[in-house]
Amino acid sequence: MIYRQQVSGVSYAFDGLVEVMAKATPLRSGDQLAGCAAEHDAERAAAAWVLADLPLDTFLNQDIVDYDTDEVTRLIMDTHDRQAFSHVSGLTVGGLRDWLLETSSHDDSATRIAAIAPGLTPEMVAAVSKIMRNQDLIAVAAATRVTASFRTTVGLPGTLATRLQPNHPTDDPRGIAAAVLDGLLLGCGDAVIGINPATDSPQATADLLVLLDSIRTRYDIPVQSCVLSHITTTIGLIESGAPVDLVFQSIAGTEGANSAFGVNIALLREGRDAATSMGRGTVGDNVMYLETGQGSALSSHTHLGVGGKPVDQQTLETRAYAVARDLNPLLVNTVVGFIGPEYLYDGKQIIRAGLEDHFCGKLLGLPMGVDVCYTNHAEADQNDMDTLLTLLAAAGAAFVITVPGADDVMLGYQSLSFHDVLTTRRTLGLRPAPEFEGWLRKVGMVDETGRLTPFDLTHSPLRALTSAT
Image (cartoon, rainbow, N blue to C red; front, side, top):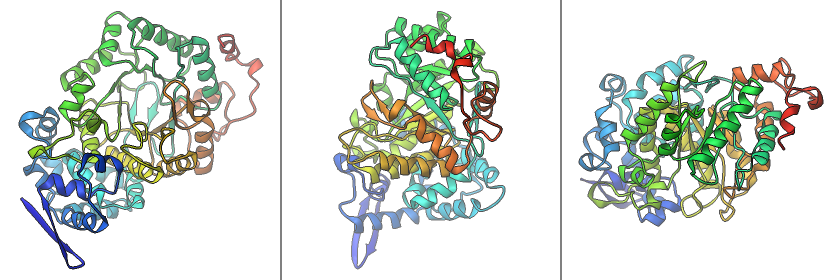
């Protein structure tokens, strides 16, 4: 189908829904690399106009990625909740934007948005995000509530949780223990203490799991741990009795991209079921930790949709959230600037993508977080990360990732520091997850308001942790 729109007397034509979606997307380098971006702002405006006028049921009648050849599309269509969709089925994409913005001003906005979430497909959500300003994305996300729990609860109103990421280039236990202590003393780690291992060796992964679990149990810390190995490694470790809390896996928005990660939906479900059977959670049983990122499908050349046309990276990113939603996860985060400037060129593109990803994931019912980050060859700096962190905190992000000094010495990229989140919590009146904050208060690190207090490590049980460093 050809869609046409005039802008300033010039007529623009778009060959199908895939092209409309791509050319309506705010500018980003990955779409330019894929050859699907609008050539200029006028063409982008024309595509956005077409998109705003499309009925939502267009996305139920036209595939972005072919149903017969892609299991992610089949998952989206086969699990679509028609009853939930009936509340908004008569709307256009532009009408959904208006409904969301109007609903976000109501006291019961979270309930009303949650009621329609199962009826929204990722493509509908991606479409509406494309015609929203940053302010719109923040307002609607802030009005949406999604919680999940294992030993702590993430996503509660007025909280901002953190992943404490104590990576080390050689997986040295002393270096990891030092980073864990640093983060705990600054009130971080309530979403997860999660290590990216230097290798995917089962034995090395098991050793790291034992290290983190021994820290948790020795100091009675209500937190979950995770070593971010491939899901097949983790399933094997569960079978051998290793202390696995969460199962991690990177996921994407097409069957081909997931295959490039070495996974499919059946394997992901197997990992979820294996971890659930362990029964290690205390306040909940959400056991999956999933990471995504705009550009992952393009990087493996698995980004083509109906008719062999390239699908824009933000739509494919949002399709990954359908896979995540199927797994009922504890944590989902987009690693927004990690893949590099080939996909998100500068600070402006990274900020926009982070807000889009958070909005789309949360609207689809996910406990959504963001790794606020960039690579050293991107046209971005830590000021851009400060801006994105503050905007995400205002939008109600479930969690962000923190590393010592904001510099991950193992993965070689820039993220957030423990101090960055401490400042943001103080500035915006946010607190850690309640179970974790209770522990911080118990050991004397915060007062009744949740603020850090002067802390004498020499008289704390945590002093013993310094011996490992």
